[in-house]
Image (cartoon, rainbow, N blue to C red; front, side):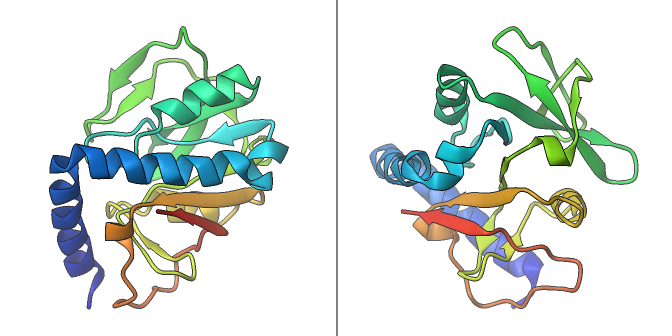
Length: 179
């Protein structure tokens, strides 16, 4: 199965999950419990993650917990040539909507990859070996190619799919937290 097909099929499953709010919230609670109990989270002083949208795993509770625990938090901001930087955010950060419909910080307080202890990597579909199908831009694979910190992804059951093969430039994540 090619990535485009996997992406389409998984997005359809996520749309269906989005209609079952109690099930989605139950899976999110189970996965967040795994994340917050992990040594990856406990040892991290800085965390990079996305501002989730719609069908994605909600990251709001993660951001709030990180701030409560005094962790530095950063979110991606796209740059030319399909690159991205992680920008430090606070409760006072102001955002604008990007061309992709994603909220990005207006500030440019860039955190270099070696300043982020943990990167929570989004995706559409995941293999058990950590390879992922993203939204199709290749931004995370480019970023992960040079990233040396810990990586994880937060995965709904509906996102697991072993029916595709990773490509040369694909970068796996180190840990999957799954419901």
